[in-house]
Image (cartoon, rainbow, N blue to C red; front, side, top):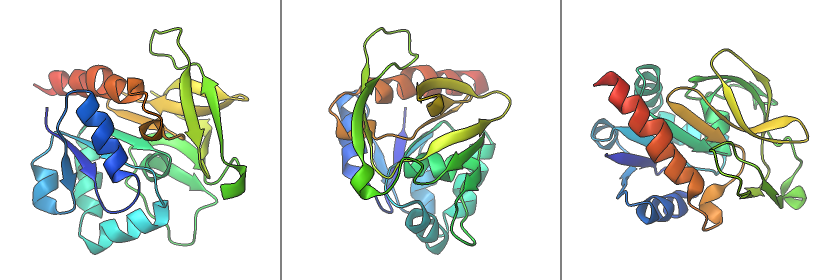
Amino acid sequence: MKVGVLALQGDVREHISALVACGVYPTPVRRRQELDAVQALVIPGGESTTIAHLAQLFDLMEPVRNRIARGMPVFGSCAGMILLAENILGAKAGQKGFGGLDISVRRNAFGRQVDSFESEIPFADGSRELVRAVFIRAPWVEKIGQGIEVLAEIDSHPVAVRSRSILATSFHPELTGDHRIHSYFIEEVARTALQEVQ
């Protein structure tokens, strides 16, 4: 499977390392031809408005949006979740995203940088083992639409969701050394989605 990591801003190296640990050798994606060469995409944590601005500058906004609409498997963490949401609450004026997930997300829902925290939370992948979740100026999901499965919550707020071909977390699994969620994306989300279109 050819997996790309959107390499415009944010935790790009950390996602690449996590994917390599799962046996996948990803391609950094900064240009249209690099996007065209991959079957699945990871959108890293970082600053959602900066990533969106650079995606427009590098002429990637519409190509990524179109690939997602056509069913390309995607995993977004933190800023990636914001960019995948159809509705962004607390968005900056004119902020755009890639869309694809029928959710409403609130930016910086847990507070500012000083309010960042770590927690061990259940993740609905069939394992009883908790996931170490790092929340940094993190969003949460305030509303879910049809076809959205909630995989993890904190205080009744969804912090990990998936649709058929899209996985999103409001936390940063790429920062923990625990590669369960990357593995879940590869094996359960991406491979399943790609098999369905073959």
